[in-house]
Length: 256
Image (cartoon, rainbow, N blue to C red; front, side, top):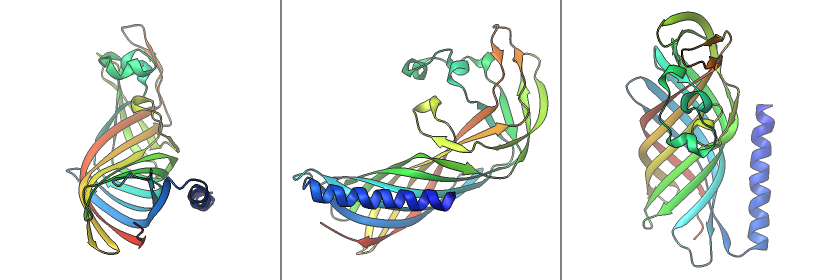
């Protein structure tokens, strides 16, 4: 299943690239790259392997490039990290884009303390690159969709705004990843914002910040009604973490 996903994604990218280059001279294929990124903060570390293809858009456009690719990311560490209720209706009381600007309703939010975090993701990725000059570029990329896996972890769910009741349960990474927007995302994602330098013709070095967004699903959710009259029965919990990262890309072909 995983191998089929990767092969299908690369095939679609290749076919799409050939079609674009033949049908539209305004879209120009540039570099194919593969690379590794590693990083850490006070409690989480990660390693990421990726491959992607870039294109330039527009006949006179010289700086912006757009890319598609696939990425495997593995994160580990983080003893006793707290994950919070992952449901925008509960956290903000609203649906749609309006939920992004609403204050969180603390009484609707429970906490899941996971003993250790270990999440692996395999996702399709969107890449954006802005060339400052022939050597320096700003790279931004984000996971779009895919799947996640990892072992079950012992965890403690703390629920109820006044009682602080607890329940022991097992938690696993939510299996499906789909980027929607903000609180409506489902699953786990890795994103980068990095400054890259063309060290040699085929070597690009990069450093910057990486965002890890992980979701665990518990196998023993609690159903209760809080003092606001809201029925709570969620089984998904999320955390976000910012890391400093470095990496290196190998350039297979360089087209100007």
